[in-house]
Image (cartoon, rainbow over all chains, first blue to last red; front, top):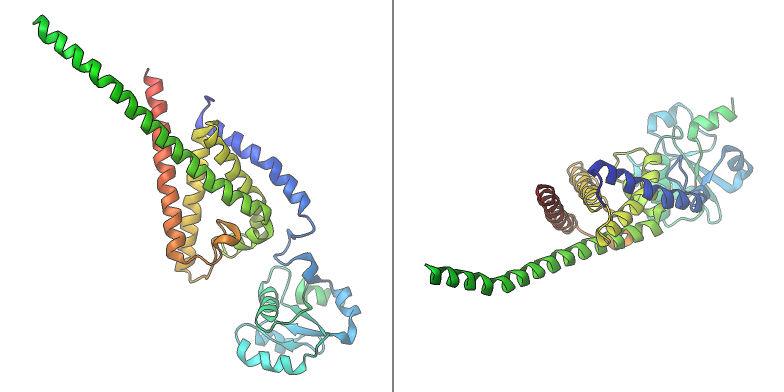
Length: 142
Length: 167
């Protein structure tokens, strides 16, 4: 097929759009466009509050932000002092309890990283990330 | 004089079949390279298209693009690779396909080197789960080998087009 290089590139790029769009629709429940966390691992403020005492809150923000204010009863566990803070968290944790990790806002990664490490390194199940983080909590509790 | 011309004519007649034969062999070898490169990209594209969640996470690990862009690329790039590879196999939009594949492997190779320099421990995601335990040197060597094959094919297609335009 004779056409200019740009023309060929545009045709191929357009062709690939069709199956890609189909796949995006097919996988819409398995991947979130807003956050790297799977929808099944996210929890909203309302859902989390509904869990009451069966959940432990984990604050993944830096120490000074935790000291400034935090969700009542939350435990500080951030990546900077992971080795020091993890034993303190495990002392409070009990089997069957849900873990809700939060950081500053929707765009922060700390809660995702801490949740990932709790699942992988501490081998804990039922670890959730709070959608919207501390910012969302504050909006609901103002 | 007449005799010399006959000898020359005969000699050229004798050499002709072997030239045609070697041309055929070269054409066959180029075609093998076409299929080998296309096969690699169809395999890599299919693996990633089957697990876009993992591929989005692999792209995100480079810490270059925002998450929504990583997701969009995870859905789009595997199919672009597959279509370009099919273009190579069926000789359809060949120059465009080779240009896209060369650009994409070049971008991924540079991103991998940049990630290594920044101290990020990443998996390239080039071959889905199959490439998760690859070391940086083997990852780089594979990418450079594919890049060399693509550049050779691109050079061949471009020079053939130039020759056709001259004729």
